[in-house]
Length: 115
Image 1 (cartoon, rainbow, N blue to C red):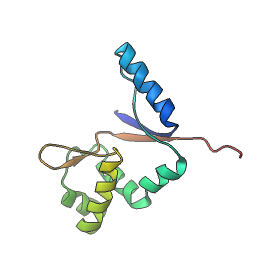
Image 2: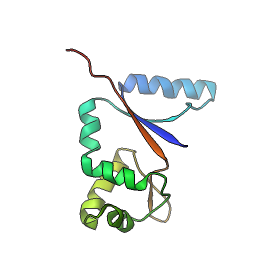
Image 3: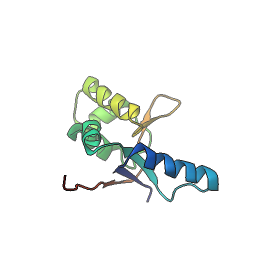
Image 4: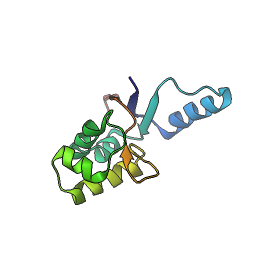
């Protein structure tokens, strides 16, 4: 099963992993999409956008219209959410214009610490 981890970590930590992978030539063991703060993660991944990710998990490439049908929402509203997810690097667009979430599972990882 192809899993992506959505996590919260500093940009320097994320770059350190990238640099290590580049030096060694070995990719990370799993895909990661990192956000600088929990607030940014929740700003990008709203409830409606989570619905889109759930509908696209393991689905392969689909059109925005098909995505809207799967989540039971207006195409224009789904288009706005898809654009936000594309800009954040969570979704990909393929050559024919369809979108894809190339994972079958999502893991969310972050710590809440005392101030």
